Length: 381
Image 1 (cartoon, rainbow, N blue to C red):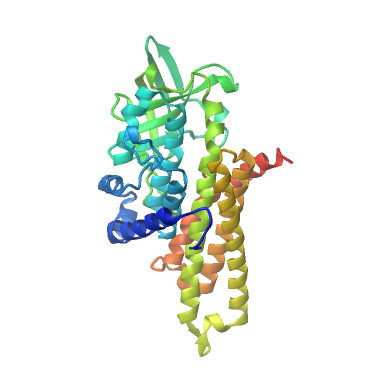
Image 2 (cartoon, rainbow, N blue to C red):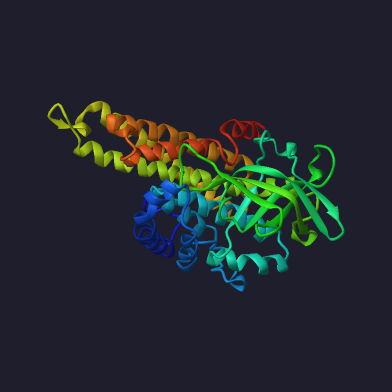
């Protein structure tokens, strides 16, 4: 990882040290078992809560640390750099994505109900946007909420939902009006213990295997209208205001994981012998590593610029889209080159670079595909 970055101070360095210890003691010994199971143990959430890893920007009145967003980016960077992208993805959805919606759009009563549990890990949060057949077309959502007195009655299905197996509360995009207009959809928080809420399969993925990704079903789920997040009919406006943070975090985890791939590859080629000398001594190897080092250095500078802009409240949709696009695509280039430098061993699951390669692929898809990022960026030309 790059050191002496101007946006961070000694408190962030101490947090990094504690996160590295946590990953070594609480994640590493169990990680292979979690990958085999397709999800982390639920007990990990409580341990993360005790360690102060979850939702650090929650105000003290709701049992949080009241920190600024840099604490989130340090957690995201360190968990991704640890190589444990499953737990990193779980935490990011909970802390970096879902939390933003609740901090900015929940009522005080809603915050008091949900935020303390999100901080201590007793409540796991997911967000349910994608449906079978809709992909990135959020205006095509078919999950419907019908008003019945003081309740919504919700029917529909979601897929590719991160934290779906563990989630206690799900921020859900539902259709509350007619037509495809932006005023036809709302956000409703659905508790998982309500009648009619069902978890489907924990989906079998290429990478990030220990990050559970699920189907969810709503069969006449009755939820109080008081669980509406923000104003009725404002889902699209709220989503558009929060997606830049999600995309910045994906860019951040992308470059941290790419840095990990690079670092372990440098160590490998220095040790690996070919034709009587270390692979690192071949000019083709040195030049490829020089290219990768340059891409990473440029990427870190841009990520830090975007983090600073976000702290000031000025990160635009276009900048966040560029961060996600460039960093995730760069991650793909870096891990591919690093697999190549490992030779045949890079294709073996027992080597960490193989897992990093598989874990990287989805970064260009979730949170908005690279193609959608290009479309958003093009609108600012």
